[in-house]
Image (cartoon, rainbow, N blue to C red):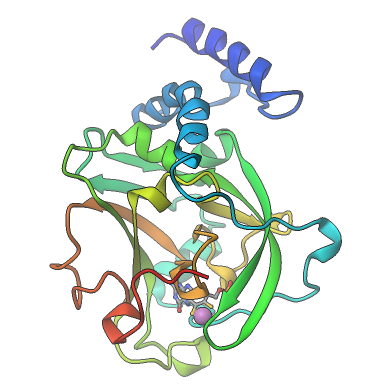
Length: 263
Ligand SMILES: Nc1nc2c(c(=O)[nH]1)N[C@H]1C(S)=C(S)[C@@H](COP(=O)(O)O)O[C@H]1N2
Ligand SMILES: [Mo]
């Protein structure tokens, strides 16, 4: 794709995104092939997400700035630790990559800078943990469906599996007091393409802190807290999750929780 094509597409996008919705300076970005692929998808995405909503039972409630909880309790792992994660923290996550692979036509490897150049969605929603607490927060990120559209799903794709950087065997002092296992989660394609399903990078207008899943975490707003995978480094598209870890589609599911954790 030439720079000229990009510029023209950017102009179209900026037009229908509304003022300020997409600030796009083609000259200042270094394109990598997978990012270009995502970018080409953006125009299609608005139409697809609006149609998807008609089949998904609507939106989770959204709240106002005044409703935002003064504190948002971190839960589960609140610092993955380890040499590799700590190095990413020290480098401000500039070398973090989100891999999207499995049953896709075009595997993607996206930096945070790539993700931040894409159209963002911000939503103020209530997080509901099975342990009996809730918190309202403002999340900003990229709609997962747009990324999956860019990756191009195979005909037999059925689930998105989120692989996280934390292993709960870790130090109790970092929230790793649970039974051994790498944290992971999964959703079906209905939730993956729901417009409120985000790969979030900001909480309350600031980059996600380590306790809340830096640098990337899932928001899937019609389900409980344990579905909201933090520290995401890989999204694997699969036909079945039976071969992954305990086979029930998530760290807590493997320990008896429901896979569909509707609120
Ligand atoms: N990677 C990872 N994601 C996770 C967890 C975890 O321990 N590790 N805990 C889950 C649970 S039970 C909840 S309630 C939320 C807590 O999100 P918070 O720490 O931002 O409040 O993250 C979920 N996602
Ligand atoms: Mo939770």
